[in-house]
Amino acid sequence: MAGRQNVCWNLIACVSLEARAPVGEGGVRGLVLACMYSRYPDTVLSRRLLFSLRELVGRTVYATTTTTTTTTYNNKPNTTPKHPITMSEPATNGASNGRNLNPFSKRSDFSAQSILLYKITTSASWLLFLVTACYYVFNKPHEGHHPHGRFWQHNYPTPFAQSSIITSIYWIILFILQLFYAYALHTSNTVYVHAAANIGSHFIAHNLLLFAFVHLWVRSHFWLAEFLLLVNFCNLSAAYFRHSTSPRLIHVGAVSGPLAWNFVALYWCGAVAVHTNHAAARIVANVFIWGWAGYGVFFLAAYKDYTMGFALSVLSVSTGVGQFLTKPHILQLQWIFAFSIGGLLFILSLAVGLPGLLGRDPFPRGAIVDEDRERAPLLADE
Image 1: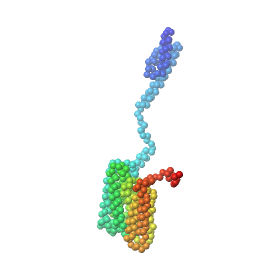
Image 2: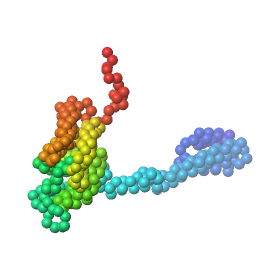
Image 3: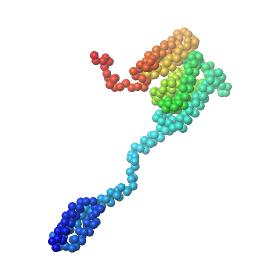
Image 4: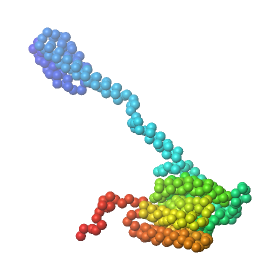
């Protein structure tokens, strides 16, 4: 009997120690303890067997429950979205869709279909305007009841009459520069392609508006022509302020060059629509023409854009020549003011553009002065 109890006590010690072992072996130990408890139900040995059995069963139940819960959780399908949806996403998607639907919005990337569409539409609108302008320079329309004439036949003697030769040369150069814009859409350089595509809708609208302007101008619908010039001025101004840092060749042909002419043409067409050349009108024109100088200085100071300065300088000289050839010559000051503005803008444009052309411009076009540098003293500490 004593030997049998010693064997049982040793078995209890082993089971008590191994009760903290992995649960996979707990089933066999539980059966052994249950058999021993049924053999000695009323002894101290049985109470110790019962305690060990409860400890083992309790640990087994806890571990089994934990394992089942973990397995169930791991096998549960993951319904959590990879990207949490927030309330701001619909608004963001709506804004993105709105920008995609707006042809004048600024974008960072374009699809191949969009680039192809811009290639076709920009070229078609450019050819439409070019052919129309060239045709009506040498021909006049024959339908309608208003006085008809070739394009430059309506350059009546007004305080803003221009030189047909200088302005025609200006537009020939501008048409050539616009070929560089069209070429930019066909290059492999993504910077040039994206810059040209962003301006594409404005350029197409510009061509179509001037196409309609030419038709109205040669048919003497000057007020309607003035309205289209005003719309085109808003269109080109929006293009300029949104894309002022576009590559230079694209910027000159598609934005700054047309914008400069459109600004001057507002005065020119408006003077023809008013159709007066009296002294009072000339005095008012002598004041208004200085707005050209302010307009050019604004772009030179705010954007360091010497292309606008040079363009307005050429158009001012064209107006000066046109005024010099316009009668009456008594107390004629408009041509003096026009030449003065042209010379002033030319000198200022050289001062702004020459350092950049030589690679010595400390503040390139479109650059923002650093705040620390702006607050720095003018003289360095010695």
